[in-house]
Image: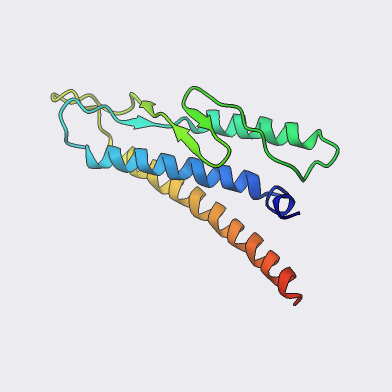
Length: 144
């Protein structure tokens, strides 16, 4: 019964979003840390690929007998390997920005934009998860 509580509704989707945005945050902050490192190539995770894979998993789940319950089966991509309880990510060079004389193609403004967008997505997913857990806690306590 407990497994059914955590596998229902939006929780599995939100869990995957938080895992992806956490992995992407690490990649983006690594790019910022190495901004002036010669020959460093900024890397990123493909958000479009993640969104398409997550969309396919949600559509597949909706086709079951109980469309809002059960586990969410997300397919692996070139960069993302979805485990039962975690996400293994392999970032690829983004090849965006201007190539400087030190062979570093940095773009601080674009990297900061990606970081801000990623942080917003991460915080939004965390807030929705927090609300889901708050609803569960209210139900457990029997108060409305």
